Length: 200
Image 1: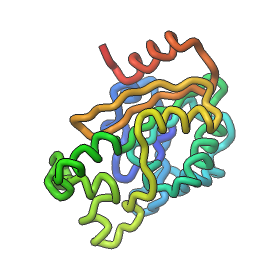
Image 2: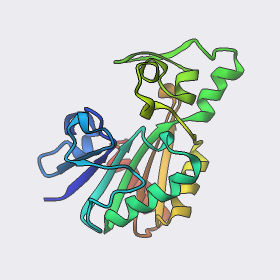
Image 3: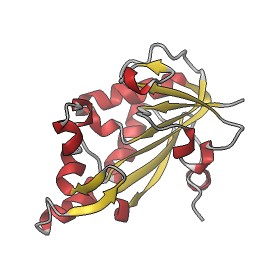
Image 4: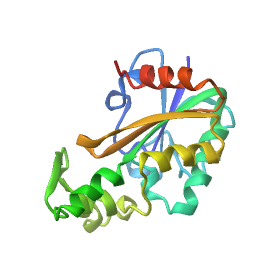
């Protein structure tokens, strides 16, 4: 049974990830820095030494890499690469700073951009981290870096991924990227990205 590593899972489980991983054919391994969310493995993106090399078929990282300092991103991505099988892939989503900065330029820094299950999210929250959580003492929620789609894809390739594709979801102020450990043709990568993210 193929396994995916759910990095920075928080309280989320397999039922809340993208459709591609929800099927019975995928086994979830949850990893988080916070032991109170009861992950399978307590660890950080920059040190996943508890995860054996080439032991998972996929890595799923939802809104995690923006919590790292910029110089730590490559370290984390290399850890993703290390734990992936030779034909493995990663799915990464994070805030879209380009879309968010349009709100700032329009003078809407504190205006709710959308409402999440945790409450209203403003441009300030997207850029620096969800203020109510940080105010409550969860400093893991602070954001320390950010990405545009072009920067995210180039960062993935610079870290060693053979192929990468993705898109911006401006309405959700989010970026989505799929990256493979191996190198495939650009047209095949585009098709693979669309299949993993269930795009028509």
